[in-house]
Length: 164
Image (tube, rainbow, N blue to C red; front, side, top):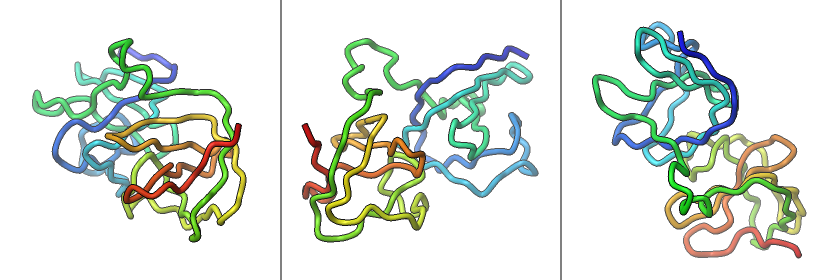
């Protein structure tokens, strides 16, 4: 068992949904019902190898995923190359909601309905952001209070504006 703790970011690079597991195993018995979509970016805080298969533990508590399955690459590190570092940043910023509607917080950096949390940011709310992650052309913002992620734009309309 190789095992390490830290903080890494991975994205789903296969074309299928990836279901998390309760433990680092391929077993269907350990499925959690939590799904990751192709292109989703996740924070990983533990990595281990079981029977020469690498597994990743999601930092948000949703469970474990496999890095590869049947020689297919499922998860790939984000920012493997230094010039991509602009796609991910950690710090502290303040944003305000500039749209007319409530914005539903997501469990991860995605628009996916499955990731909806039921929690809202209301028009005019000011929020602290401690992580920014670009998925495709869209910046996702992680709320510093731990409630989840929101998007900076949707359907080319600005949703959140950075305060300087």
